[in-house]
Image (cartoon, rainbow, N blue to C red; front, side, top):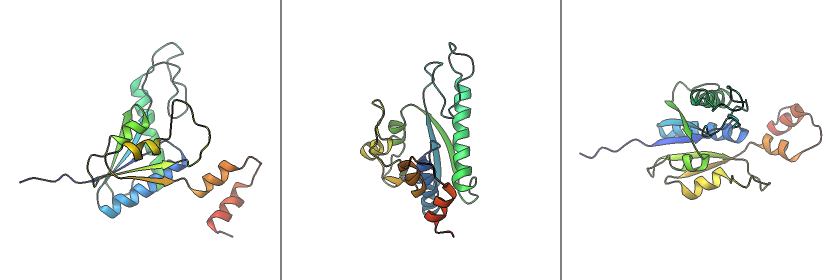
Amino acid sequence: MFQRRQSRVFVGVDKSLASLQALRRAAAEAQHRRVDLYVVHVRNPARSAWLMDSLGQPIPGGWLEPPRTDWLNASALQVIATSLDEALGGTPADLTVHRTVLVGCPGAELAALGRLDDDLLVVGTRGGRQWRHPGRGSVSRYCVNHSRCPTLVVPRPELARTMHHRSAPRDLWKEFDTISGAR
């Protein structure tokens, strides 16, 4: 008899507020669907020693030596652990969470994850039309256009939008109270 594989929920994280918001939504979707959650971080390939890791720390070993991939993978796993802690207060007890590190271009790697119509890919968006690096486009846009499964694009939190559009000094606690409705 044909056995159907269980659907999954994938979410990409990269330390941004938008990805933390996406992780919260992905966890809620996985709990609602009663499926496993795959938390994915896509790191840069270890091509040269000038490459900075996703944690923003210089790669150990000097300027001319190639970086160690075990260190890069450990740093990427730390990004996932930190994201789970900051977004959900740790790994939810009622949810099976898989931590996955992929190497390559974030958009392409994330878009290739879901293969079933009932899989779900959740990505955050920084949601602006600001200048972009010529070699990088919008990861969320790429995923929507190339993913084989449904893709949910989660907007960044209101606080991140407020902080992005202001350049003058500000009282973040006052802004947080205003946004959250606290007095």
